[in-house]
Image (cartoon, helix red, strand yellow):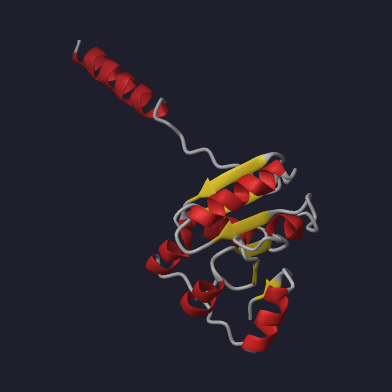
Length: 160
């Protein structure tokens, strides 16, 4: 009798954990994904997909003052030419978008989706969470004049 009770308890225990909500993460490269990611997942996805384009959509002063994720490009979310600029990008490419706190990245991802992009991931809590997690950020080392020239033309600026 004790064996049956223990067995039933074990079955109940195992079924409880097997029904627990599983974290589902989309596969890199899968179609039709506009997905917010937490810092750990964002970093993992970046590492797994080196061909993706990483976009920083923070304010210029934030990019220059706060730092950026390596291999990022800057595109000013608040610039009038933002929508025109993203429409010049390859809609089949994978994009990782971030800003300082997550708000602009979320709004930018929505615009990407409206414009027909299908594989867009954005850093839910922004690069502030990246920094808090101890992940590396780079400081802009290029010439301010170069940055401003590209910025004023509404082009992608390679952050270096």
